[in-house]
Image (cartoon, rainbow, N blue to C red; front, side):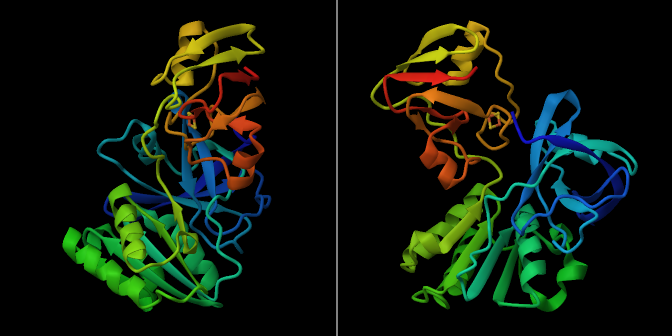
Length: 317
Ligand code: FES
Protein backbone atom coordinates (compact mmCIF):
# COMPACT_ATOMS: atom_id res chain seq x y z
CA UNK A 1 0.00 0.00 0.00
CA UNK A 2 1.70 3.21 -1.10
CA UNK A 3 0.29 6.58 -2.03
CA UNK A 4 -1.93 6.69 -5.07
CA UNK A 5 0.01 6.63 -8.32
CA UNK A 6 -0.41 8.68 -11.46
CA UNK A 7 0.80 7.95 -14.98
CA UNK A 8 3.54 10.31 -16.10
CA UNK A 9 5.41 10.51 -19.39
CA UNK A 10 9.17 10.72 -19.84
CA UNK A 11 9.75 14.05 -21.59
CA UNK A 12 13.51 13.86 -21.74
CA UNK A 13 16.44 11.72 -20.67
CA UNK A 14 19.84 13.22 -20.07
CA UNK A 15 23.21 11.65 -19.34
CA UNK A 16 24.40 13.50 -16.23
CA UNK A 17 27.59 11.56 -15.52
CA UNK A 18 29.08 8.12 -15.94
CA UNK A 19 26.25 5.64 -15.29
CA UNK A 20 23.87 8.42 -14.17
CA UNK A 21 20.82 9.41 -16.20
CA UNK A 22 18.21 11.98 -15.31
CA UNK A 23 14.59 11.66 -16.37
CA UNK A 24 12.12 14.51 -16.75
CA UNK A 25 8.60 13.29 -15.96
CA UNK A 26 5.50 15.23 -16.99
CA UNK A 27 1.75 14.67 -16.92
CA UNK A 28 0.21 13.15 -20.04
CA UNK A 29 -2.12 16.15 -20.51
CA UNK A 30 0.39 18.92 -19.76
CA UNK A 31 -1.17 19.84 -16.42
CA UNK A 32 0.81 20.87 -13.34
CA UNK A 33 2.04 18.20 -10.93
CA UNK A 34 1.46 18.15 -7.16
CA UNK A 35 3.75 20.55 -5.31
CA UNK A 36 6.75 19.26 -3.38
CA UNK A 37 9.55 20.56 -1.20
CA UNK A 38 13.34 20.00 -1.41
CA UNK A 39 14.34 16.58 -0.08
CA UNK A 40 11.16 14.89 -1.33
CA UNK A 41 11.10 11.62 -3.24
CA UNK A 42 8.62 9.81 -5.44
CA UNK A 43 8.06 6.08 -5.75
CA UNK A 44 8.20 4.70 -9.29
CA UNK A 45 6.51 1.46 -10.33
CA UNK A 46 8.59 -0.56 -12.79
CA UNK A 47 8.08 -3.72 -14.82
CA UNK A 48 7.89 -6.90 -12.78
CA UNK A 49 6.20 -5.19 -9.83
CA UNK A 50 9.35 -3.35 -8.73
CA UNK A 51 8.87 -0.19 -6.70
CA UNK A 52 11.77 2.21 -6.33
CA UNK A 53 12.05 5.53 -4.49
CA UNK A 54 13.97 8.36 -6.19
CA UNK A 55 14.63 11.86 -4.88
CA UNK A 56 13.36 14.81 -6.88
CA UNK A 57 16.22 16.98 -8.07
CA UNK A 58 14.76 19.83 -10.09
CA UNK A 59 13.64 23.23 -8.81
CA UNK A 60 10.43 23.33 -6.78
CA UNK A 61 9.32 26.25 -8.96
CA UNK A 62 9.12 23.94 -12.00
CA UNK A 63 5.49 22.95 -11.57
CA UNK A 64 5.12 20.99 -14.80
CA UNK A 65 7.74 18.30 -14.24
CA UNK A 66 9.57 16.08 -11.79
CA UNK A 67 13.21 15.27 -12.45
CA UNK A 68 14.87 12.21 -10.97
CA UNK A 69 18.41 10.91 -11.49
CA UNK A 70 19.27 7.23 -11.40
CA UNK A 71 22.68 5.61 -11.17
CA UNK A 72 23.05 2.25 -12.88
CA UNK A 73 24.14 -0.01 -10.05
CA UNK A 74 26.29 -3.04 -10.94
CA UNK A 75 24.57 -4.91 -8.11
CA UNK A 76 21.14 -3.76 -9.30
CA UNK A 77 18.26 -5.97 -8.22
CA UNK A 78 16.44 -4.70 -11.31
CA UNK A 79 15.41 -1.13 -10.47
CA UNK A 80 18.25 0.95 -11.88
CA UNK A 81 18.64 -1.42 -14.83
CA UNK A 82 14.95 -1.07 -15.68
CA UNK A 83 15.17 2.71 -15.42
CA UNK A 84 18.19 2.85 -17.72
CA UNK A 85 16.26 0.88 -20.37
CA UNK A 86 13.47 3.48 -20.57
CA UNK A 87 13.03 5.75 -23.58
CA UNK A 88 11.63 9.24 -24.11
CA UNK A 89 7.84 8.96 -24.41
CA UNK A 90 7.55 5.89 -22.16
CA UNK A 91 4.89 6.01 -19.46
CA UNK A 92 5.60 5.39 -15.77
CA UNK A 93 3.39 4.98 -12.72
CA UNK A 94 4.66 7.52 -10.17
CA UNK A 95 3.45 8.32 -6.64
CA UNK A 96 2.85 11.77 -5.24
CA UNK A 97 5.98 13.26 -3.63
CA UNK A 98 6.70 12.47 0.02
CA UNK A 99 9.31 14.25 2.11
CA UNK A 100 11.21 12.68 5.03
CA UNK A 101 14.26 14.90 4.51
CA UNK A 102 13.04 18.48 4.91
CA UNK A 103 15.20 21.57 5.09
CA UNK A 104 15.37 22.92 8.64
CA UNK A 105 13.29 26.11 8.57
CA UNK A 106 14.94 27.31 11.78
CA UNK A 107 18.55 26.98 10.61
CA UNK A 108 20.62 30.01 9.65
CA UNK A 109 23.27 27.98 7.83
CA UNK A 110 22.77 24.81 5.80
CA UNK A 111 25.77 22.54 5.16
CA UNK A 112 24.99 19.99 2.44
CA UNK A 113 27.37 17.00 2.21
CA UNK A 114 26.80 14.64 -0.72
CA UNK A 115 28.50 11.36 -1.60
CA UNK A 116 28.10 10.14 -5.19
CA UNK A 117 24.48 9.73 -6.32
CA UNK A 118 23.48 11.07 -2.90
CA UNK A 119 23.69 14.45 -4.59
CA UNK A 120 20.09 14.12 -5.86
CA UNK A 121 18.06 15.35 -2.84
CA UNK A 122 20.84 17.78 -1.90
CA UNK A 123 20.81 19.22 -5.41
CA UNK A 124 17.11 20.10 -4.96
CA UNK A 125 18.02 21.75 -1.65
CA UNK A 126 20.90 23.58 -3.32
CA UNK A 127 18.51 24.87 -6.02
CA UNK A 128 16.15 26.18 -3.33
CA UNK A 129 18.86 27.72 -1.15
CA UNK A 130 21.12 29.34 -3.71
CA UNK A 131 19.15 32.61 -3.82
CA UNK A 132 18.52 32.80 -0.10
CA UNK A 133 19.94 31.53 3.19
CA UNK A 134 23.60 30.83 3.81
CA UNK A 135 24.56 27.40 2.54
CA UNK A 136 27.53 25.27 1.53
CA UNK A 137 27.48 22.30 -0.83
CA UNK A 138 30.26 19.72 -0.47
CA UNK A 139 30.23 17.04 -3.16
CA UNK A 140 32.41 13.91 -2.90
CA UNK A 141 32.81 11.88 -6.10
CA UNK A 142 34.90 8.98 -7.31
CA UNK A 143 36.14 11.03 -10.28
CA UNK A 144 35.10 14.09 -12.27
CA UNK A 145 33.37 11.76 -14.74
CA UNK A 146 31.11 10.52 -11.93
CA UNK A 147 29.94 14.01 -10.87
CA UNK A 148 26.35 14.80 -11.88
CA UNK A 149 24.90 18.28 -12.47
CA UNK A 150 28.39 19.76 -12.87
CA UNK A 151 27.26 22.31 -15.45
CA UNK A 152 24.48 23.61 -13.17
CA UNK A 153 26.38 23.53 -9.90
CA UNK A 154 29.42 25.18 -11.46
CA UNK A 155 31.74 26.84 -9.01
CA UNK A 156 29.16 27.05 -6.24
CA UNK A 157 30.10 23.70 -4.73
CA UNK A 158 33.26 22.38 -3.17
CA UNK A 159 34.28 19.21 -5.04
CA UNK A 160 36.33 16.34 -3.61
CA UNK A 161 37.35 13.90 -6.32
CA UNK A 162 39.09 10.55 -5.99
CA UNK A 163 39.58 10.77 -2.23
CA UNK A 164 40.40 7.64 -0.18
CA UNK A 165 38.83 6.96 3.22
CA UNK A 166 41.49 8.81 5.20
CA UNK A 167 41.27 11.90 2.97
CA UNK A 168 37.47 11.84 3.18
CA UNK A 169 37.62 11.63 6.97
CA UNK A 170 40.02 14.58 7.11
CA UNK A 171 37.93 16.66 4.70
CA UNK A 172 34.79 15.95 6.71
CA UNK A 173 36.55 16.88 9.93
CA UNK A 174 37.55 20.20 8.36
CA UNK A 175 34.03 20.91 7.06
CA UNK A 176 32.38 20.04 10.35
CA UNK A 177 35.05 21.75 12.42
CA UNK A 178 34.31 25.12 10.84
CA UNK A 179 30.76 25.07 12.22
CA UNK A 180 30.97 22.92 15.34
CA UNK A 181 29.61 24.82 18.32
CA UNK A 182 27.14 26.80 16.20
CA UNK A 183 23.61 25.54 17.01
CA UNK A 184 22.17 27.56 14.12
CA UNK A 185 23.90 25.30 11.56
CA UNK A 186 22.12 22.22 10.24
CA UNK A 187 24.06 19.52 8.37
CA UNK A 188 22.48 17.34 5.67
CA UNK A 189 23.95 14.22 4.13
CA UNK A 190 23.04 11.58 1.58
CA UNK A 191 25.25 8.96 -0.02
CA UNK A 192 26.49 5.40 0.39
CA UNK A 193 26.17 3.96 3.90
CA UNK A 194 29.93 4.08 4.55
CA UNK A 195 30.07 7.73 3.51
CA UNK A 196 27.16 8.69 5.74
CA UNK A 197 28.77 6.81 8.62
CA UNK A 198 31.92 8.90 8.06
CA UNK A 199 29.83 12.11 8.20
CA UNK A 200 28.17 10.96 11.42
CA UNK A 201 31.58 10.08 12.90
CA UNK A 202 32.97 13.52 12.00
CA UNK A 203 30.00 15.25 13.64
CA UNK A 204 30.24 13.05 16.71
CA UNK A 205 33.99 13.67 17.05
CA UNK A 206 33.37 17.42 16.83
CA UNK A 207 30.68 17.24 19.50
CA UNK A 208 27.86 18.32 17.18
CA UNK A 209 24.49 17.14 18.59
CA UNK A 210 22.70 14.51 16.54
CA UNK A 211 19.70 16.87 16.13
CA UNK A 212 21.85 19.08 13.90
CA UNK A 213 22.17 16.32 11.27
CA UNK A 214 19.49 15.34 8.77
CA UNK A 215 20.14 12.39 6.49
CA UNK A 216 18.51 10.37 3.74
CA UNK A 217 19.45 6.75 3.22
CA UNK A 218 19.22 4.86 -0.06
CA UNK A 219 18.22 1.80 1.93
CA UNK A 220 17.49 1.02 5.53
CA UNK A 221 20.09 -0.51 7.79
CA UNK A 222 19.93 -4.30 7.80
CA UNK A 223 16.85 -5.41 9.66
CA UNK A 224 17.13 -6.72 13.19
CA UNK A 225 14.34 -9.26 13.02
CA UNK A 226 12.22 -10.12 16.03
CA UNK A 227 12.23 -8.54 19.49
CA UNK A 228 15.27 -9.24 21.67
CA UNK A 229 13.04 -10.79 24.35
CA UNK A 230 11.73 -13.53 22.08
CA UNK A 231 8.88 -14.07 19.67
CA UNK A 232 5.31 -12.79 19.64
CA UNK A 233 1.91 -13.79 18.36
CA UNK A 234 0.53 -12.20 15.23
CA UNK A 235 -3.04 -11.99 13.98
CA UNK A 236 -3.72 -11.12 10.33
CA UNK A 237 -7.23 -9.87 11.03
CA UNK A 238 -8.61 -9.56 7.50
CA UNK A 239 -7.32 -12.99 6.50
CA UNK A 240 -8.53 -14.57 9.75
CA UNK A 241 -5.10 -16.18 10.20
CA UNK A 242 -2.86 -16.15 13.27
CA UNK A 243 0.60 -17.52 13.94
CA UNK A 244 3.63 -17.27 16.18
CA UNK A 245 6.59 -15.17 15.02
CA UNK A 246 9.73 -16.72 16.55
CA UNK A 247 12.64 -14.44 17.56
CA UNK A 248 14.85 -13.74 14.57
CA UNK A 249 12.08 -14.32 12.02
CA UNK A 250 10.51 -11.49 10.01
CA UNK A 251 6.76 -10.90 9.97
CA UNK A 252 6.83 -11.00 6.19
CA UNK A 253 8.31 -14.52 6.26
CA UNK A 254 5.55 -15.73 8.55
CA UNK A 255 2.90 -14.04 6.39
CA UNK A 256 4.20 -15.85 3.31
CA UNK A 257 4.23 -19.20 5.03
CA UNK A 258 0.64 -18.63 6.14
CA UNK A 259 -0.49 -17.49 2.69
CA UNK A 260 -1.22 -13.91 3.76
CA UNK A 261 -0.64 -11.58 0.83
CA UNK A 262 1.45 -8.51 1.76
CA UNK A 263 2.92 -6.72 -1.28
CA UNK A 264 6.65 -6.05 -1.06
CA UNK A 265 9.37 -4.53 -3.18
CA UNK A 266 12.54 -3.33 -1.46
CA UNK A 267 12.16 -5.55 1.63
CA UNK A 268 14.42 -3.03 3.39
CA UNK A 269 11.82 -0.74 4.93
CA UNK A 270 12.39 1.95 2.35
CA UNK A 271 9.72 1.90 -0.37
CA UNK A 272 6.43 1.67 1.56
CA UNK A 273 5.03 -1.20 -0.54
CA UNK A 274 4.22 -3.32 2.53
CA UNK A 275 2.80 -0.47 4.65
CA UNK A 276 0.18 -1.99 6.95
CA UNK A 277 -2.38 -0.70 9.45
CA UNK A 278 -1.84 -1.78 13.06
CA UNK A 279 -5.07 -2.72 14.85
CA UNK A 280 -3.50 -3.77 18.15
CA UNK A 281 -0.01 -4.04 19.58
CA UNK A 282 3.10 -1.89 19.77
CA UNK A 283 5.28 -1.91 16.63
CA UNK A 284 9.05 -1.86 16.87
CA UNK A 285 9.90 0.37 13.91
CA UNK A 286 13.06 -0.65 12.04
CA UNK A 287 12.24 1.01 8.71
CA UNK A 288 13.43 4.18 7.01
CA UNK A 289 10.04 5.11 5.58
CA UNK A 290 7.77 6.41 8.36
CA UNK A 291 8.25 9.87 9.79
CA UNK A 292 8.54 10.56 13.52
CA UNK A 293 4.85 11.40 13.94
CA UNK A 294 3.77 8.20 12.19
CA UNK A 295 6.12 6.14 14.37
CA UNK A 296 4.86 7.78 17.54
CA UNK A 297 1.22 7.21 16.56
CA UNK A 298 1.90 3.47 16.17
CA UNK A 299 -0.94 2.98 13.69
CA UNK A 300 1.22 2.04 10.70
CA UNK A 301 4.20 -0.25 10.24
CA UNK A 302 6.41 -1.85 7.58
CA UNK A 303 6.33 -5.60 8.28
CA UNK A 304 9.16 -6.37 5.85
CA UNK A 305 11.62 -5.20 8.51
CA UNK A 306 9.74 -4.02 11.60
CA UNK A 307 8.73 -6.10 14.57
CA UNK A 308 6.65 -5.98 17.77
CA UNK A 309 7.58 -4.84 21.27
CA UNK A 310 4.92 -6.87 23.09
CA UNK A 311 3.41 -10.35 23.05
CA UNK A 312 0.67 -9.60 20.48
CA UNK A 313 0.42 -7.76 17.17
CA UNK A 314 -2.79 -7.48 15.13
CA UNK A 315 -2.45 -6.21 11.55
CA UNK A 316 -5.19 -5.25 9.11
CA UNK A 317 -4.06 -7.86 6.60
S1 FES B 1 8.78 -3.81 0.98
FE1 FES B 1 9.57 -1.82 0.84
S2 FES B 1 9.10 -1.01 2.78
FE2 FES B 1 8.48 -3.05 2.97
